Each structure stands twice: as C-alpha cells, then as structure tokens.
Image (cartoon, rainbow, N blue to C red; front, side):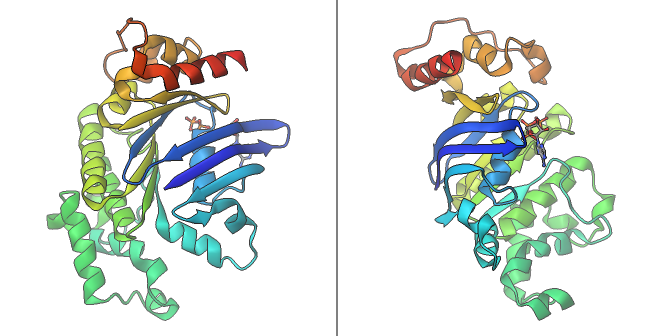
Length: 282
Ligand SMILES: Nc1ncnc2c1ncn2[C@@H]1O[C@H](COP(=O)(O)OP(=O)(O)OP(=O)(O)O)[C@@H](O)[C@H]1O
C-alpha cells in the first residue's frame, strides 16, 4: 500500500530524512516511534503530499506522492489526499459545527464544488457519516456542537471524519499526545478496530512505547532521519529503544511502564537486528 525508497527531505542544511526505505502492507497498523525531531511528522507529511520530498521514491495508495507535490494542476495531489487521510494531534475539528457536520467535512473532497460550498450532502453521505460515528462510539452525539465534547471525544470525531473520506490509508500524527492514558487507549482502540474492519492501512506516530507494542502490528523506529528498527512489538528490545532514543530515559517515552525485557534478540529479529546494525554504523 505504501512503498518508500531512499526517501530524503532536506530543509536548507538540515537533513531531516536521510534515506528511508519502508513498505507498509495493505491493512497493516504501523507505529512509528522516535524522539522529538527524528522526522516522524515529516515522514507522514511526505506520504500525503503536504511536504515535497527532496529525493527518493514514495508511492501511497497507487499515487506517486513526490510527483503529486510537483505537479502544477493539483489534481494528482487531491487524488492522493482523498486516499490518504490525516489525523492530527489537535484533531483540527471545527468547534462551532455539530459533530455530524464535522464528520461530513470528510466528504468534501468527493462532492461537487457547489455542493461543498452550500454544504449540501446526500442522504448516502449522511448515512456514511453516521456509520463512521457509530464506529467511534459517538452516534448519540451527532447533533451536539463539537466544542461541547471532551478532548478524547473530539479526537474520535477526527477519526470518524478521516473514515468518512473512505481512504485507503490513514496517517495519524501523535493522535493521543494530549490525552490521559485511559482515553488514549480508548482512542487508539477505536482507530485500530475501525481500520481493521474497513481494511484501512494506518501509519501512526506515537511517543508511547507501551501503546506502540499494544496497538502496532509492526513498529519502526526513526532516529536522526533514518530507520533504526523494523519489527514486531515483541521484538523491540531495550537495546533497540536505546538506538531509537539515544539512551534517553525510557520512562519519559511512556505513559506507563518502561520496557523491561533484557533478553537477547530471538532468531525472528533478524530484520530488526540488521537495521539496528545499519543504524549504529551510519
Ligand atoms: N517546514 C519546516 N521548515 C524547516 N524545518 C522543518 C520544517 N518542518 C520540520 N522541520 C525540521 O525537521 C526536523 C524534524 O521535524 P519533525 O516535526 O518531522 O520531527 P518529529 O519526529 O515529528 O518531532 P516531534 O515528535 O517533536 O513532533 C526538525 O528539526 C524540524 O525543525
């Protein structure tokens, strides 16, 4: 679903992504871990064309993201963004609109310009939006103003809006950064379950190692713009975390327990180990 090869992104002299190779399979829930400034947001922004890569190959949902950002017409970029939805840390919902209207804004890319200007939505769009709200447990809040909801509920509205786009991919940039642990887990559960049921691929940036292990089908670790770990949650050892976070205190990266597994990598961690070595050498 996503194929990335030798991806680089440079801001002036700041090399933010330094040769990222990554494949994400259809329906996979991939978590990206990494310290602040590692390039996690930049990676997501490249995937949905918010940022133009400096070099490399990036195909998401069948669209060449690099070419889409360079194309003047904007058509390719719109097509890419229809298939690759984004969920932000601060949910970006419109507070004064009703919950249902916020979710319906996820349909704007698919309705005519006139309909979108007049906010005219078909009965099917409304039914789809209600189904998306049901998937995040907020059907009963449809008519309420969004500013009457809690932070966790607003983030669930953000998820419903992304689902309403009917995308192939959802990119979630630290979706639970400002939520308490219980709410964070609930939000991630809704995101994972809805995407699993609908077959949507997810790439989710997180700062919490425990949630990465719990919710990710697979985890990649980004440090200094390079992938230094690629494996399953049960393959992620303390040595990998040291590589990702540069020996930072893991308690700072987790809302709950610090990783405590000191076992040597199992034979299945070959891929993870290879990457670790590459990261350590470069
Ligand atoms: N538009 C921009 N112009 C210049 N530099 C940028 C821009 N966007 C990001 N950067 C730089 O790229 C680097 C990586 O930023 P990025 O936001 O991708 O990191 P991150 O891993 O998502 O961090 P965090 O976990 O704190 O969100 C930082 O040094 C940042 O200053």
